Length: 56
Image 1 (cartoon, one colour):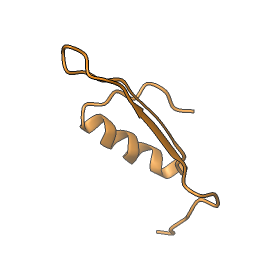
Image 2 (tube, rainbow, N blue to C red):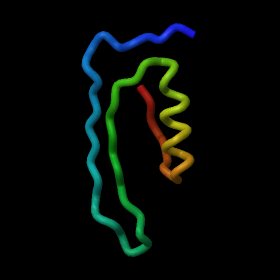
Image 3 (cartoon, one colour):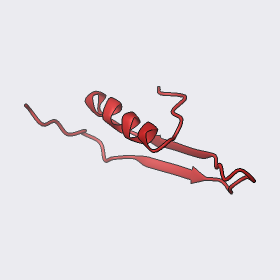
Image 4 (cartoon, rainbow, N blue to C red):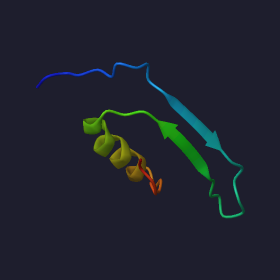
């Protein structure tokens, strides 16, 4: 396996909203990933009961 590193500095930005009466929050995030990092990253988010609804 060949390790590859992104040429640009890693980028990540997140916002967390207040909890509603059911204990749910709106969390918005933006991060830069290599193509082979997308599945493990989203899988770990979903494993912790986060909904991933958009990838670009």
